[in-house]
Length: 253
Ligand SMILES: Nc1ncnc2c1ncn2[C@@H]1O[C@H](COP(=O)(O)OP(=O)(O)OP(=O)(O)O)[C@@H](O)[C@H]1O
Ligand SMILES: [Mg+2]
Image (cartoon, rainbow, N blue to C red):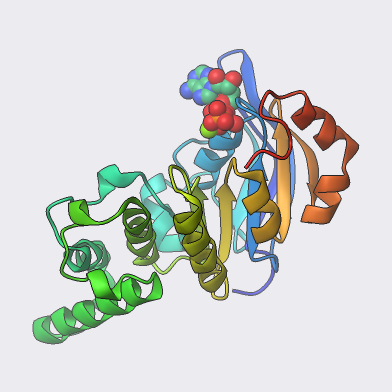
């Protein structure tokens, strides 16, 4: 895909009379990892839901690879190349890591319809293994998902999202509930994955965001109050003001 991956123009979302997001404009292109941050209620999840098709905008436009997403149903987003990781509920706990990924690949198997059944199955097996390997789970291939460590389950969710071969991967708090070691592993994984696709993530862990992202969008009360590099965001007076006013403070991990 050449040119911008995602163009957001004057995007807004109302819930009845309440405006959860308003006038958001941003273009995602070359930057590989973009983070969306902001205090509670800022509109992060709403923004994320708009980008993944779970919600439709009430104003503005959203283009992906030049294509207007206004009338595209959510089920088509993955086919276009936008995938989001869901919470653990979409992982089948009794299936092995390998079976979980293979199932996700099978859901998209229409792409492989020109293959014979046997070739198709072998292709799926190999691709599932490659995806597990890409998220560092090759050694957990035969383990039931329920028996994986928390961090491994999150990595499995990402492998499942990658089954759609997305150009844009949306991650909602990929390190939620993780300790420092697991967080470190996830950060390394995100760096690797970002070599081949754009990643946009919502996160609360400020230190991690500053180290990981090439670009940060800051939302506050539904508005985009800053958009820049980690250094620019750290120096931004408005951002500092918003975060210093929070109980957690700006530097909280
Ligand atoms: N379906 C909805 N109906 C009504 N109001 C909503 C709905 N979804 C979100 N809101 C409101 O929109 C605002 C933004 O919510 P959103 O969930 O996007 O915030 P957030 O930045 O993700 O917050 P958090 O950090 O707590 O997850 C909040 O005031 C919220 O109450
Ligand atoms: Mg949220």
